[in-house]
Image (spheres, rainbow, N blue to C red):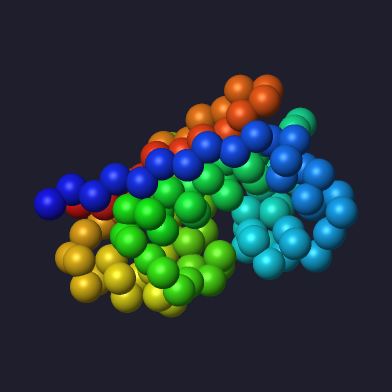
Length: 117
């Protein structure tokens, strides 16, 4: 059985939340994700796409209790992929699935789709 998750986010919404609560970035994103975004021209756009990927993975795996760091989006010069740990990894093993993601963004909106199969 194939499971799909999708998420969309207005980039300005995440950017505003991060500006109001700088510690939020550490809670939501791994050091690698923050580092990747910091090296880009529009960091908030890349963080928003990663946020969407985490949400999409959680939906595809039907996760209820999980940590934001249980799903890490990897990639730079290659297509993005996820590294699962903690509850996300346990759930993927329970379902006997691997998870693939696709990220997208416009200047206004970020989105991601996750497929668990």
